[in-house]
Length: 252
Image (cartoon, rainbow, N blue to C red; front, side, top):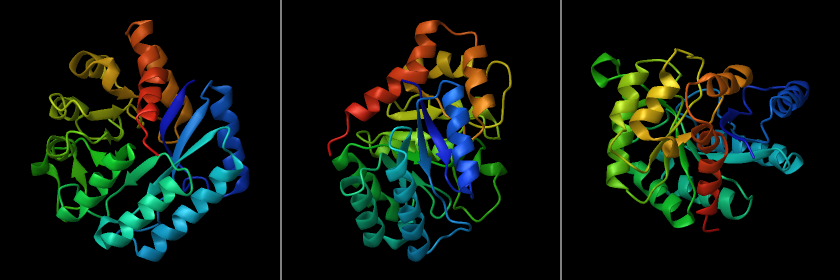
């Protein structure tokens, strides 16, 4: 089963676009799509992210054959954010947690959410940039690959997914930044299709730490995996087996 670990419901505002997206995913051989629903602006309010998750739950309930769902929260809301996360996992059957630019990954308010993800046995997908901090202007709410790596070192039992190595910035730096942190996976999404990106990730991280993702760019996302100069076994790990391993670790 091929699973896309990074997609967005909020990129598909109409039912027609949603239906078309799922149709093309199936045509391209993508069996399951893991989707989050983000607010229109950040930092988002409590009302924003609870509304986003209600919409995601409605969509998920109607497409369980194709869709898995991420809960989206703003860690700044602390206990309320943790309650929403746990409710989405236990009561709505969501896959894991999606965190965006509402709060930096090393902010102490993030810690309870990571601890809860460990308790539940579910992954955390982090929107991040592959850009060294010295090149990033304030405010410091967007996390980068090195900072996600630091979070992974602080919580070695967590399953952290570094979003879109092809999403902009210096992907070579991003891959190297998480190289020594075994509980940080990378997803392959993003519009970047430079020759050697997938191959370098396999070489530096091992195929076991890579997850297929598209960020809604289905044809680009799947093509760069099939075009990469890697073994069929490595391709199968990225497209299928690593994701299945994450799902088996779920404790709920």
